[in-house]
Length: 420
Image (tube, rainbow, N blue to C red):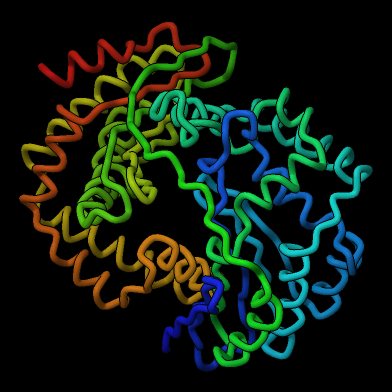
């Protein structure tokens, strides 16, 4: 498998990886225009724009967009994150040019029909309402807000209802003008693809765009804080975030190995102690997520009202214990899980295309898998223990609680236990 990368004169980037033996391909456009690129009055507009891309172009109606891909057995979709908006499709190898044409069409030529804007506004408001009805969704929005308070990175991707209710056609067009320049776009493809043909199609479709500098995202600052809301629910939802490295910091591998050993699987410390030994919950996990310039290690659990206090304190105790006696066997197991998860995931052309795009966005290049595996293997037990001590005692923290939480400790109380 060979990764190839090119760039048009206007800054539009193309990256692809041919995967021998596959009869299908994944192809998409990743735009550096996510939630953290919005001004406060724009909060939610990147996601709104993603929806509107499928609601008609100068050449196709909304139905024709769907039919063009589904007539050949493929699928097309999109998503908005805090750092990117992606438009992608999965098709058979003979239909790559069709997928490219459709994706390019929805990115370059949306008409923003006022009637469709109103229809989709209603859909998004329903999506926001559904999120608020899903406790283990909304708690992560609150945790993000507390982690990066009063910053674009801390705002919800969906946006507040009052802003979504007010967005106009001009607002959508304005966001495109600000952020959808060729230098902000990456064409990424994997599977049964021909890089030279992709280059030719990219030149024909995107080569005419004039370069324009996108707005630079505000540098993130982990602030920490606490959000708690008492509500009559079946479970108390507990989420703790700790400041961690960003993608560009090699310490990200240490952080990911730590969170895997702490709460990444059935053999992890939190799962074994909190669920298996003490029976305090059904779901508990730890994970490390990262952005270009920051990251968070997050612990989440759902438990009963009378056990949320014990769960929180036991979690802190397990974090402190990990700093003292994390074993080489645990680190080796976490390394194996991390490598296997990455390599298994890359058997999918869709996952591979997404990885290529994200690496080009972050690094401007695609480091080899061998380099990545070597960095994972290079993390020592001593490094994991040192990181575990930082997480247990020093790292800035944010806390979110939702449900019957009267018995839950405050963030200040958890900080006291961390320092003890």
